[in-house]
Picture 1: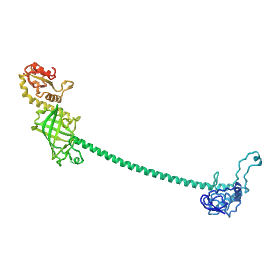
Picture 2: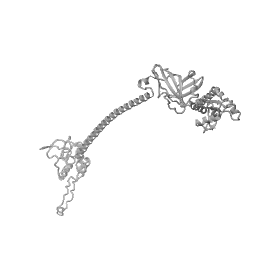
Picture 3: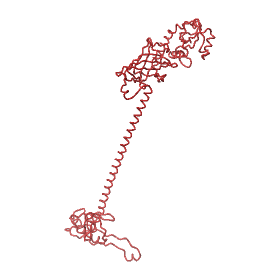
Picture 4: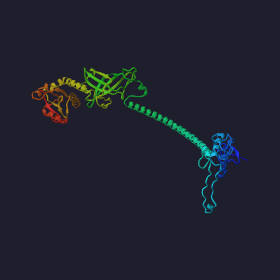
Length: 456
């Protein structure tokens, strides 16, 4: 009769315990006594007929596993026979039967463990076995474990590939979403810039941005006015750009006004946020100058006699003044230039006001201030710019105010006063000292900073 291997399906005899192809043990297991007798046969088997070195069953050269005991045949049959023959001369060929329980043991109810048969050392050395099974079973199990490991590796690799594909997909969609958000933010930023530009009376659309140029325009002073003590100057602007509808949007632009060769106003402006927009090559520009940025009373600036220079790459000094009455505010120029311009302006003012001062030789007026350079008073050390600033502020509050140099008038020199002072007079005329004092009180001025004077 024949049967098929339960593992690989190879055809085998009905009494075969192990498959000759894969070495798998079959359901019917031979008794230990049969194994022991097979070992004895191995010891005396002739070398000419190869047999299994473990159980002695005849084998052929093409077998990988013994059909009887399932031992792995890892060497040629002729080598097995040669290895088994010397062993027969050294060890007894009489098999040692397994020792079973004696009648006395059974009578006492104790069943001692079975003693396995002793196998020839040559067979043990030639074929490694492990507890609980034969070498053939071990190799088959190793092969199965290898297959399982390979399947696990393949499964892990597949899982990693799936995770990688999912990760790439998530990254791609996130990248597209980020790009969309960035695009939206850029659009929003551009919209905000356009809105800001329009609120300043200009446009910063891409088409206008493309028309921007760096050539400074020519400015001509059209008129001057004031907002409190701030000078408001209005200019007509002529573009020097190649395109007549371009924009001038540069920072650090110094605008200087000269009257008769004297600097009467100068400040540094930033047109990058409030550009000058031209239409047909012309535009109108309004600029604000603080009392540290102009050095002549606004109503004494003769627009017909002024020159305006525009210089790029200027350096702002301090903070930028806020815009005032629709006019763009600027930053101060260098401190040394401010001091020099103020000193020149004071000398011009003395000459300009000399005729107005002559009327007070015989008429009473009021003195509002008396200062000189480096004077320690009112919590500071006075400089030319401070004296000029005070004069500008007085002229806004008292439009008739004039400036004199005290040493030129006997009222100061005859009384032994230190006459090296710039004196600001109200320019108002009074019939008596009491009337002059009444004017001081009416204007909220005390005797310390308002007193009757007659220059003769």
